[in-house]
Length: 172
Image (tube, rainbow, N blue to C red; front, top):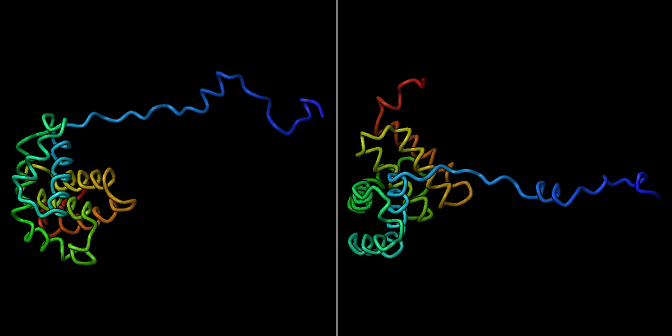
């Protein structure tokens, strides 16, 4: 059997093989300060849900992280302390739309849902779709495989309860 009879394609040059093997790097947008504050608040809420520590201890631990200075400190404080102080009220809102007790949820999804519900309830400067999308992105980054779908569904239903006028507006 000669090279031309071979069922395999001719070997590529080493440079072409390298170019084919290495996919182009994916470009990601730099994280803005609000997104960082949500990520850090998520980490703090996760710690709080697992340890039961007080908010000040959790905040002190999170403040030690290298990228803490790059977050929107005010939004971080609002989310962390607001979610901890109002956890029972937020869980009551979420309980209408989850399929089990919130204490039985994954701590990551629970924390993401707390942040999303808090922003829907109290951060009227943030459009409801942005609050939901940011929570979904947190769930994609830190949660389980399909956790973001669950978060999206629950928060979409919460938005209909918490911001009925805004959620009913037709999409443009």
